[in-house]
Image (cartoon, protein in one colour):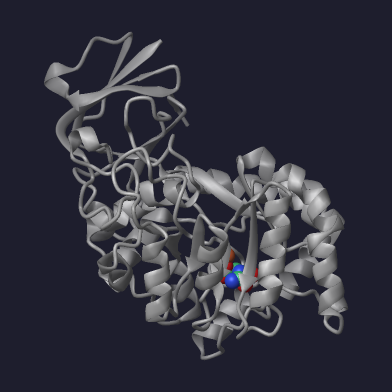
Length: 413
Ligand code: NIG
Ligand code: FE
């Protein structure tokens, strides 16, 4: 059965056919959202079958009148930690009165997650993914990292796999207390038996590379974690440069990671390395499988009261930028991509179009996915309908629930 979504006031496709950019390219995406005014979309068998002006839309089995609303590709939230137990709201309150964020609170979530039942973890993860969907997120990545023992890491990833194909093994989130005096032994566990138990449930391997945080991992440790994951058939991504201008970006580019996330503190060499990872890969069809995206997580700077990453510097250098929530109980517990877009515009001086591209096509590039993040013909029919005439309203009306409908794989979610 085909469905015609019509009377769309503004359609954002990221499709080059309409002047957009569905994939990263050297020189950056610019403002190319591939917009069509007074548009329609035809959806068939879960995929986009046609987009264009409503006046020339083909016939379909069913028509849905969207009454002038704006339609976007579903948000791609490429970084979250949404399977966990416990509550760290008191840490947030302490930060708001001056405590710094050090990553030390991760141990509290590890203790609660180990103690939780599988059903409780599953229920929380499901509820958060539902919450994200209601805010327009149709693709989400979920990490382990609050188990830090073989059984709990594997349990987190089994549950995450029920919720999304984009699952990430983050056994190397921090060194748990019982290994504080033998980091090498924890690394052997993470790169050995824990990896073996987790790899069947994961697509990605990640590491919190941050020499400034005593419980996180330095360059050599991080390299060993990523190398082991790659050998096990996983693809690499990195938490890097969150608290200091550490080696995370350098390492991510060295191993060909799809993304390095946070990027709050960068040297000129880091920016050059990220831009260089995309060199010679211009034009459509060539971008998705290469280069390291800079994924910015401004809800974390908001919730840790930290300086925001310099998005303009990255964009000026031609580095593809993604935006994601990093939804987690510690450093930032927002599941809202519209909030992240508003922060990116207001606090990081991204244009509304740049921010929306980064929250859709940018997230897809960070996950090396070419079937989401845009509405090219053949893409997954994942659509977010805003109760607003244009995408500008995402930042113009922050905190307002603008998402009127979400379509996932061609069906109303
Ligand atoms: O992405 N940087 C490390 N990991 C998470 C924080 C996790 C936590 O504090 O629980 C992050 O910010
Ligand atoms: Fe994170």
